[in-house]
Amino acid sequence: MSTFKDLGLNDDLLQAITDLGFEKPSEVQAKAIPILLESETDLVALAQTGTGKTAAFGFPMLEKIDVSSRTTQGLILSPTRELCLQITNEMKLYGKYCKGLNVVAVYGGSSITDQARDIKRGAQIIVATPGRMKDMINRRLVDISKIQYSVLDEADEMLNMGFKEDITDILSHTPEDKNTWLFSATMPREVATIAKKFMNNPQEITVGKKNESTSNVSHEYYLVNARDRYQALKRLSDANPDIFSVIFCRTKRDTQKVAENLIEDGYSAGALHGDLSQNQRDLVMKSFRNKQIQMLVATDVAARGIDVDDITHVINYQLPDEIETYTHRSGRTGRAGKTGVSMVIVSKSEVRKIKSIERIINQKFDKKDIPDGADICEVQLMSLANKIHNTEINHEIDKHLDSINELFADTDKDELIKKFFSVEFTRFFNYYNKSKNLNIAEGSFDSGRDGGRDFRGGKNDSTRYFINVGSKDGFDWMSLKDFLKEQLGLGRDDVFKVETKESFSFFNTENEAKEKVLAHFTDFKHEGRFVNVEVSENRGGGRRGGGRRDGGKRRDDRRGGGRRDDRKGASSGSRSDRRRSDGGGSKPRRSDSSEFGSSRPRRSRR
Image (tube, rainbow, N blue to C red):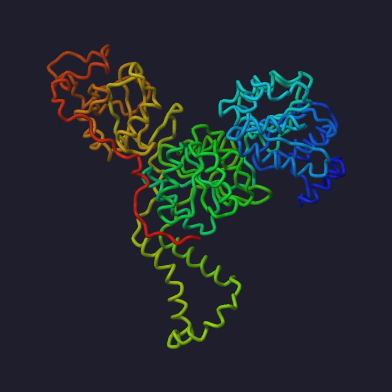
């Protein structure tokens, strides 16, 4: 089927499609629309973000509902406010010629009373976030007992965000004979469970392979030391002067910090995360859509619903904890038939994740080098030259030409060009002159047989430590890693191979951090008691237990005999520690912003 008319849509929808400039249906639209128009069926559709899923369920729903009735007939659930509003606006555009159509958005952060009033006026279709929808049902402000069609859009992301119970509760208030259409980029076990519980023999369509990335996106990774991550980000931006990108971080704190540092360094950047007020998020997104912001730094949750077709790059400042989330990230670029690039900045401990992602998205990553200063200067120079060459002349300047010509009367053409371009070129040259090479080699890595745990290269590349806290002290491997990272002022990837036992634990750092680690935990107190760290011989970090420490000398050889009482564990501290003076206390906590360092001449706004 080559046109929307061939799909069987009515004239009102076809007229709206013409107004929107749509020419040919996307693959997911061509597969889903005929099925949903021709039969009353449940449907599971797997397709990447940016492939036109809203139209794939939106057109059939608009075709089937009765716009002359004020009864709510369609419910669309989406994970975030931004996506909820996006779907609502698109549904209104699709149904602009459907006289009497009322589509209402229901989401947190706005007046629930106003939303209830809009529904009471007669809303054939409600687009909602799960939390607010559940709240309205509990308050009896909405009736979905007669809906005929329910849509779970971005189902995998809703479940990742913890909405499983809300979705289950919402759907329990809907009729059993309704049609449910589930649209998702990936198909994890939780999505399959929802499909099995609430759907009846659903038909399934897949665009590409399950979890596969769109072919419009190329994938690259750059290997650097964790401490150089921010410098690498800046170089990738400078090497792509026309970049219009989303930069993904794991946490809200890192998102805010990266954005603040980019702004301080003169980049056109903004942050988008859950700690911002709704008004702040709206302003940031408005600026980004208008391209007043060139680099949007975001968390995965906040980035849901970013519907901007011209994003050139997605930069994974940090890889997500869930590999499937990478599919959603890369789907922000390469939309609407355009091409895009997904870049990943990785440290040595993350290289193995690249292989895992390749298997899931069924695409290969290209390993590339962070560009050096000379390359960046050349790119910036030619970018400026092209902009000047393509600039339309403003003839208001004509009246000033005599004065300008007089000023440069003794300057020949070559010298004038050199002077003109040196204004911009010198700034980059001075900054990047004698800049260090950020790239590191992969050659030191082993085969990766790490049993699924974090790993670094050969055993001589890192130091393994014993620490006298464990699970009985409330730590698991993740919380202990965060504790160590914060105490030592290290990046997330600089603490690795964390393994917690009941009363003690192990962790690794690069060799160069050894002196810093041991110094910090000398006479160190946490919550009123001593925490001791010492070098362990258990370098492998597997599940082999403690091993011997300090070059083979047992700790008790220096402590007056006897063996360590692991039953007391962290709560008692070592006998030697208890003999030490309490005067030292704990050291002041280091800022976690070490990887964001390095000053730079402020960059001109672009």
